[in-house]
Image (cartoon, rainbow, N blue to C red; front, side, top):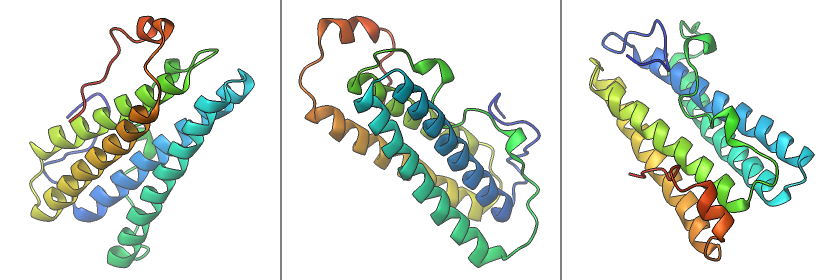
Amino acid sequence: MTQQTQGIDFATLSLRDALDLAVLIEEEARDRYEELAAQLVLHRTPAAAHFFTKMMRVEEIHRKELAEQRARLFGTQPSTVRREQLFDVEAPDYDAVRMNMSHRAALLTALKSEVKAHHFFTEALRHVGSVEVRALFEELCDEEIEHQKLVKAELDKLPPPTRDEEDDFSDDEPVAQ
């Protein structure tokens, strides 16, 4: 379907495999936020590092909920979806972090990732054959919109952007759902 997934046939995807995919997507995002937060600690940008740590926790909570749902429905049945089959579905881009990253820049990076994830699930829905998988992916689309709202609410709490922040992100503004 996309460059973000390889070897996954969305038309024949089972609910078990869809849940495994969703768990792996959240895991990838969690791990990336953790890596980026660590980089920002090294760059001594605590507000941005703190926000990425917060996003890491949000992704872990969502991953855990999906994993529990998967375990309830399918127990210990083996997964046929592997992490190597996906890349950057929801995870922020590695090059998003830079020295002196502002809190606003961290929020905009997270918003872009949530928009990217929503787009992924919206596109996947075009190819899904299973009613159960469709329902799960629709729920995941809604969840990504909720995450966008959370990030936007944080953005709204910030003072207006400085001239430097506007210049940094003039062509990078994500289009939220």
